[in-house]
Amino acid sequence: MKQIFELNNDEEVKKILGLTDEDFDRQKKIHQQGYESYNRKMLNFQIVEKQSSVIIGNCGFHTGILNIIALKLVTP
Image (cartoon, rainbow, N blue to C red; front, top):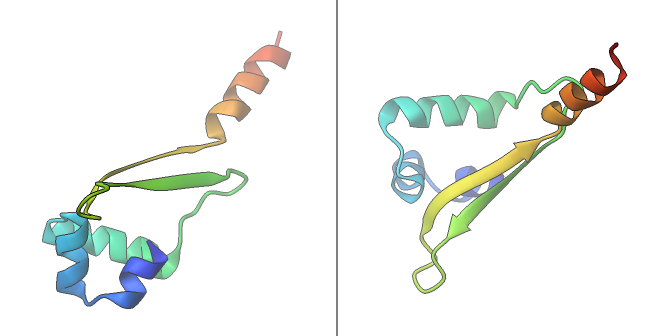
């Protein structure tokens, strides 16, 4: 995401990511201010259509669920 925001203007970012104005504002704020994840790690991927290099989606995961599972295992 960092490169998308740094290498493109706002309109290009909206087009590349397929964002509405509201979604764009939220993503830009996250880009500028960062995520608040406390003790969690996050990993996000962009899904790119191979032939056109167009971003068609994204997915990711974070370690928060691992903390919940560990807590359930040690809590009587």
